[in-house]
Image 1 (cartoon, helix red, strand yellow):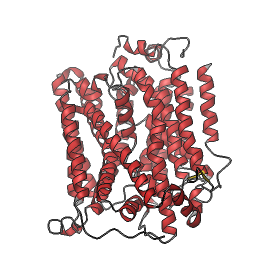
Image 2 (cartoon, one colour):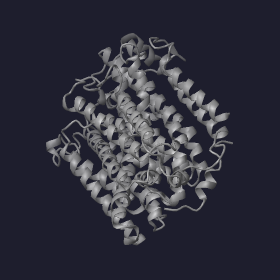
Image 3 (cartoon, chains in turn purple, cyan):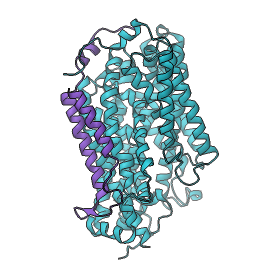
Image 4 (spheres, rainbow over the protein chains, first blue to last red):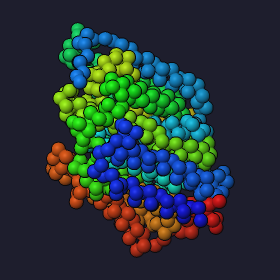
Length: 73
Length: 522
């Protein structure tokens, strides 16, 4: 369930990244930051949170053990 | 409001700051070299012993080039704040996705089978030595221009900063340190640490360099904003004189904006990044990199985007002359702050961003020539481990010499436009690595089709843009989109179509690369 939820969240983030609200808006937030830049800077934080959730809830299982097993080639 | 130009007296302080940075880098390289364990595995992948912090810094430092400071400011000066969404936040989202979905898996396969290069993996995954011979020259050809851009950018960064310092010695360059000397020093310093310590030294140096360029960017932002009367005053000045730079309408197209999502996929196929992934001590080492990478991008890019926007406002107000967009950051520092120490720090920061990519690329190409060509052709038992290290060192020296010679020969040619084509090429090969990791039905013929179609379609668009000049002075777009969108579609389409039409790989090959586990998550 977790990888599916995180995958859907990533796609939704990707769609919202297109910015359907402030494309033409020049107003400043916090008195200095253009709203479009604030919106996308927020995406950097959202991306960090999304991938933090991924490493917490969707970490590949048994990968470490598989990598440590005797190889060939 | 007016901003006086800096005094014309020439101070050598910036050069001393830069020399100090380079000396610290050499010392750090020498220290890292003392930890070299004397094995080829240590030279190529640091004995797979790199921890979370060093992996984060080396991956981030390798990913960010001088473009992160100078180019981001220049693009913002030209196109406004939309550049952040175009390049930085897309990268934050996509880079970490690639690290999580592809990087960790490749680390596991690399550790299990002892791979140190991409080509070794693809040869085994598709059971085809020939695929390696096809892929090798393409990967090398895409890395070389990337190298040249770095060296030439370093030369062009230092020249205006040192103008007038040596009027007798370097009269032909108006007293500035000439490009041949800058290139020689930059290549020599990088060579001094990667020659002895390989990828471990590169990881240590990248950590130092990343701290330098992140720090200098923030310091420049604080000092420039103070000179403008604070960030609020600077923002209002832009709204008064260049309001279009505070939005995207008219400066960036919506489909162009969307098509930029493909560019950051290039990290999935960068050979030098692949090598850094393989240095991780264990899979969990990746966790910090996956989470912190988007935040690090924001720390570097947001200040530079704002500085570029402010420069556009000042230029529109007639307060500052910016001869070309690439000079925007330098002009903001020299005109507004005119502090020699900051000029030196900022130049060191730009050099750090450039060199943190150069070192990884040099050692990666040396590793590829050694393992993918010589070792593959001559056989693994042909060389002792010690001979293998010296062979790699020989290739690194040869590649550094070749890159230096080529960059000096092409100094007057505009190679910066090649940067986006390198990224487009790597990004368009991403379907190959994604299918290799996740799609059991991907076939040898599908892999060949993917690489050949990518090369052909990339070649057509490259010819239209660079040779014919179809884009003119503007960014070359096709139906309003970056060409990479079409190359990527052709690449993925050919891989899927040809794979479905041809015989699957044997169970032995598939079982070797896919864990036979029911659930892949916990």
